[in-house]
Image (cartoon, rainbow, N blue to C red):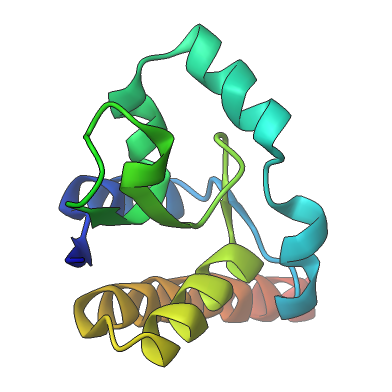
Length: 126
């Protein structure tokens, strides 16, 4: 099994973070914020599998590109990047030794923490 970085998803996540399409939630929130199978299926009914894949930092070459199981390490809710999803992806990728995915998630984590710090500075000024 070769699970590798989904560059398209990584670029999508970076773009969303730059546009502040994020939820700066806590690490433990992913179990509540992660899309359910029903939400995933609803998204697929309204979009194609390529759009679905943009929300997963990893791809598994043992599964066909046209299947949900091809995509690993979700990071958002099909609208926004969730900090808790990025943290979960970073931790799981590290545990499973998918270093390219772990490194990408760590970079996204840093971007999100930078936004949180900037928001904190802005609110301290106001």
